[in-house]
Length: 291
Image (cartoon, rainbow, N blue to C red; front, side, top):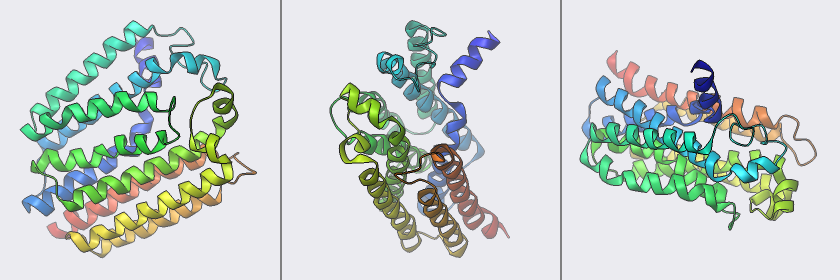
């Protein structure tokens, strides 16, 4: 049983939750302070955590089931749980159903709008896994899917979504799409051979990295706009300056001629960036105001 649990955790890359969970709580805190003029409750934060775990687990499970044949042919992914025979597709489907039930339970404990919008999240998680079969815009779809985390956090505590919520959503969507493009550069030859669609396969590595840079510039602009539209102040400004520096560094360590530091650019830099954004938002809206 313990071995199975470890395999499931590896399948869904539980450590990659560090990418989006901090932004979910950025949306939670910022939404509560902006719309309710109060901090979210511990209960709300707990249900949001469960909703995030359910949503992300279901999304990763779906991706692994839908892409199992492709993963089996790709040397980089051939040792994933399903193609390697460590898990059966039926087992993963049960896991997906349980994960969606967890998402529904958590949403129902938050507010009615969260429940009503849940089908959108379900659709996006299913739809994304098919997009590489027909559009190089698959990275943008992933961004719009993972960007639902901060938007969902905002809606979970406010029952509404205003302009700042959508700016945060689009900023995180651009950030996600940008780093996914960088990550996809390592599969460029496989994607072209298999007839799969991706921005690196369509525009080459140089063109793909240029598009990723523009998306990350939009991310920085979106984060900066929130200062003018909310009660965020200079502590948050420090955070986005640090985040901007991390984005610049991420693009400096990856080039068309050298992808050797791609994993560092993908995992380390982006995990740190999301944590930085949460920490400085928390300092700005929670710690400073409590003093």
